Image (cartoon, rainbow, N blue to C red; front, side):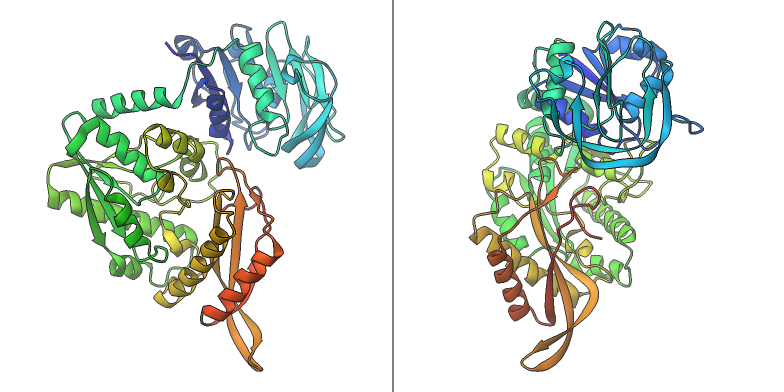
Length: 510
């Protein structure tokens, strides 16, 4: 039986990010609701337990909590943010609402040589996101870290192996965050590290076989790494009982249909192409709200797939490349989490579907999927293809989606991609694209007044898609992109560059 570390979910947007950081250390992790009975935890017999953050206050009515037996000393425990606060509260410490919140990068001071900070500097930058603070540690706990605004930013009872930290080690903005998690896994929980992508592949193929049995599956295939990896896993599990469907919803990028169909020829899988441009754009007519766009597109995709399944016959399952960031931001992973946006393949699905879902990547992040894809032998041009949302350019056209507006952003986006790739930055960047804004701008072109569209350029750096930083592109590259868009894309007279990180922004605009 593989080693397991449990992550108890208190509603954080980063819960699965914690799980991913654990798996990066080759330790298997499993996310469970925070109020799971303790006897169920005992049946798993984890090497350790991590308590996630969350949006609640410990004093709120119906604030999420966990079994007090978790703190008995039977298993090592690490509480993060709200996880530390609820731990302190349940064990007799004191938590209050702070005079001011603490959000973003903060200098952490190590106050005690805790095993969590083994091998780290006495001061380093961490990522904070909280209003409440612990002002009194529980009995037998020592303070191990502080910040200027948070005197108790870390606590420990090393005898029972119970630790709490107010900051988020799981986000990339925390320097040494991965080392803190590694210290907890290996120096506190005594993990050996026995989980790899190969383990995931073998377990997933077995799970698909058990789920599908002798049934047939259609796979929503876009040509990206998520859907392609899903298709390959399902194909390995059930062979020719898989039929892949590539749908053109009319909001794809420049030349994308030809590129995808050409790429898919290399796979020994049945692929059908459906051009549904007119029906999707018809359904989007007059819709400006981004949530409604996602819902409409999600519903229409299901309609197309169910019609294809009925035509093919004897299809019971729909496979799709849903990732965990989709689940998190759609607030379907936790009753306590706040919805960020509805992803078409999660919250955008209709309540009633004839087809049953097969989602083998649902608990993985993009970088994890890429490692699995490489282990499966999927070509790098697919593995590192630009991430592209299922609704396509429909959510990069802010406001109403029309053929004219789609064509504007399609041409602008093509220029952005071409110039970034020409500069050799395409592998360094996580994502880069254009957005057509709803505002119009006065300009001067050829000594004449113009009143044209505004295109925003977005380029970001990320490891997992849950957090991101804006890319510092060279000014000369931005100048080239701007000049080309204004000169080559009709009715555009202004280009702006987005310098927002995630959080507080998201990767897409909307």
